[in-house]
Image (cartoon, rainbow, N blue to C red; front, side, top):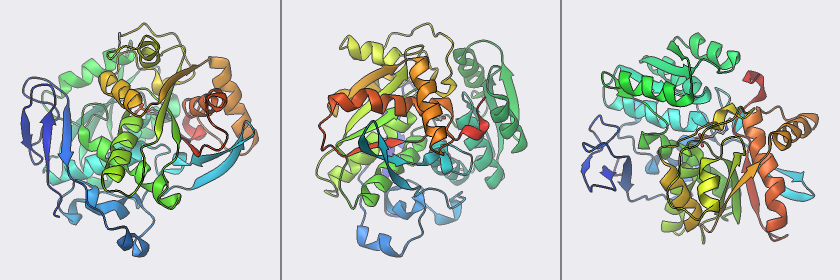
Length: 367
Ligand SMILES: *Cc1c(COP(=O)(O)O)cnc(C)c1O
């Protein structure tokens, strides 16, 4: 592989080789990957319809380390929503039932490449399912921490993959703290901290643009909790733009539930930093994140793309979920947040805008 990259802490400037098994900087800061993408799209024609078709921009050195179910290149289906044509990326069709497989495939490939045989991870459910499945495929041991309130189907899915499951009483934050403690001993395969995860989720931008014949959408509407999808999409669109494969970067429209909207709250006040909030109960368990650690970065991505942060009510989420099910799309409530967000966004958009949204998670494993 000719792709070279380093792990960078933007705050302190500290930087490390991409072959170091670390998930944060010595000063405790968040890490990013610096890399210069190169991709010859003429080569794509002969490749399998998986996210690994963008092999040249995925930061894994050796093909033999790739952990894959030949996932990705999910259908981009045009649907009429609110009287407009919306392209819906069907990421609920991934092997474990959510887009988190994008990140897990790349992250666990990296874990294998680093020669690590045991990881820890925490999640509200779906990221745990994804990491557990890819670890099973790789033969890597994993400890997954989830809140005790997680949907029984997700808990059972994580267990079935052979992961060691830790049900943590209290809030999502309590779960994160328990996992961080375990991460003192084992590598932290976190979808929030670990930048390799974002270099997996970025493939959604590559797929969307290829499926639109290298046209960038005007706006992409996404549910946001920890921002692993939004930040990945932002990295992907930036790389595509940098390589002149698209002419512009879409507006990123993030959607949160009113019951837990730390990023939308900060956006409304034009702040650069989030203030952690107290969450209320929500049907959107996948995005009930009161203090997203990359909050500042998510806000920056939204501001820089001239995007927006929107909130939707619990009733709007449930109505969107019901409407999609009656049309044959069985989504979990967290995924319906994006559809409710589309409806809210439509009056703010131009009628000719090319709009894309994502079905982030399958209904079969929700409550
Ligand atoms: C994780 C998840 C989200 C939100 O992703 P973040 O990375 O936390 O922003 C949305 N929908 C579903 C179904 C999820 O599992």
